[in-house]
Length: 434
Image (spheres, rainbow, N blue to C red):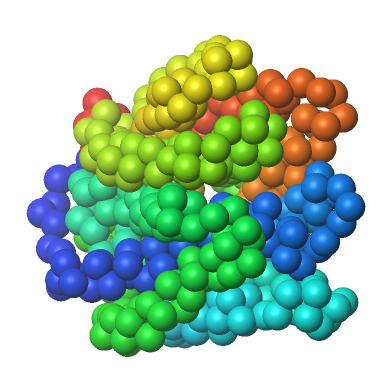
């Protein structure tokens, strides 16, 4: 223990990674998640365009199933691109994933409707979603590894929080675009071509993302002061971390996708206006962006575990009353107020989860292992969440089905949070000194 304390008492000599380099990573990350998540916010319109049916519910389910198809290839992309991040470097892996995402978003934006090319339309949409999933699966591992490795040890929580913050910037951007389009266009125009504008905005920014990522330095072979370069690391000793990480991410992933579903939930289940529905997404994104970084900053001081456990406990106590209030009142005020509260608690609790997993894995296998753990969680739990809760609502007739589903996921995650070891350098230093 004394050796551990001595290690953290050594002055940190930061590797030179200017703020513009971190900005390049987080901007590219936000663009990639914007491209992927935009589909969810226009699921109703995409369903009518590519999966026409006499039943609006069947059309929506088909669209959400295609949204879920993007999660099938995420673990494959995580293994392939994540391992490139460990063997070749973080920068080549990030460039590859971003290029593939650009191809997919352009393809989705330009695919003709079912009415024009028939069965080829849904087939193309599914193929582009699979490509999107592959690309995004390989994005999280290299970018999170880069941000943790570029940070001083005592600020890894704040740097790592930029992973989730940029994802929520993507939610905010997609919600903002959706709100503007819903305000300016009629429902028919939004169905016919309005949703394509949101995709084309992402496609237009792709060249900018590639340009800024080309200027990145490499962190793979630049260990921090508290990291020991002991050569190749084995995966087997860290399988326990992987299992606990999956269960912790289960809570955050299901909760995130339930909140991302709020737009569809408000319009399709509660029959609220499109402007109110998209506004909920806007509020969720704005609140989470603010509290993601607050959470990372606080976790550097009080530890990862206290942040995770405290705010997920508060979240699990708030979900059912919140959804009950929305379902009963069905007003914009109730929708936006509850969305803001749940988003705040989720933002404060989720950020330390990914940071803990990343810090608990050695640098030599960090990119691939973090990418795989995250992608498996997202694929199994995230990809199925929106389809499952839509089915549950229709099968049970209970508008609180999303809240019950989210409550069960959080309960499982809390058990794992209690079992995993603390990873924050500040807390480990105190423990070692004692």
